[in-house]
Every structure is written in structure tokens, then in C-alpha cells.
Length: 61
Image (cartoon, rainbow, N blue to C red):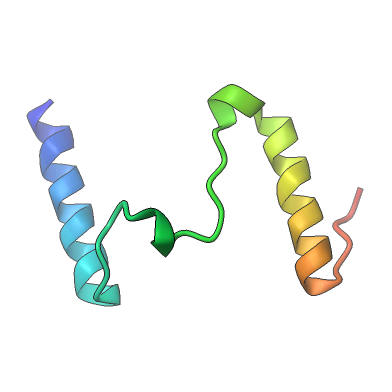
């Protein structure tokens, strides 16, 4: 557990240094999907649809 805590502190420090923002703040994310709740395949379909709507690019089937 100590390794995970150290790694999380490193990630937080790295993110703050490079972005000037706080790590884990919801307003710093464009999209969050819970793959455990939705399933990976459903998350992929959501991402494809968002890319299509936002950028006008259709993902290959």
C-alpha cells in the first residue's frame, strides 16, 4: 500500500507541475467513464460517438 500512496503522490506532483492544476478535480477532465459499471465495450461506443459528434470523424467499424 505504501508503494501505491507514493506513486499517487508522484502523479499528483507531476500533474500539478505540468498543468498548474490540482489532480483529481473533476473540472480538469473532459470525460470520465466507469468501465466497471458500463463495461469496456459500452465505454468504447460512447467515446466513438463523442468523437463523431465533436470532430465529425466516424470511427472504423
